[in-house]
Amino acid sequence: MLNGTPLLPQSGQREFAAEVSWDLPSLAPGATSLIDVTVSGARAGDLAEASLVSSTRFIELDAAVWSNNTVRVMARNISAATFDLAEATLSVGVAKRRVP
Image 1 (cartoon, rainbow, N blue to C red):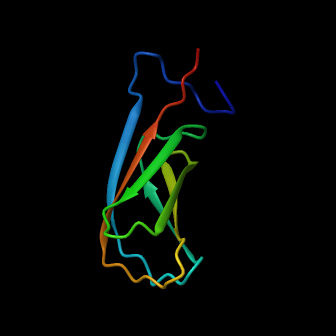
Image 2 (tube, rainbow, N blue to C red):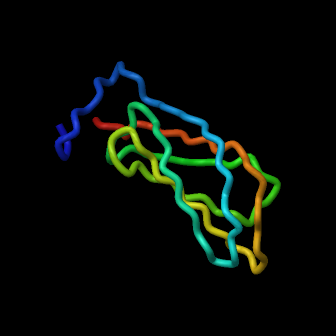
């Protein structure tokens, strides 16, 4: 047990994923927006990543397991222009940490 969270056996499932539709608000330069995504099986300390089906490369995504079964994704506008993207699919993946 690590930080009150039981470890999965080595033979258990090690990767989890979810997809949701996300309609980001209009983001001014440097602005951020958050969304919590349910990813069953995610636990504190697991590695999370996110990708957005979008035509812009100026939205930076950061993902972290926020609590059991929940990944928080933050989108940040890293350009000098305001973006108002159409609704797009957000994909979230979680990989269990390797425990020797």
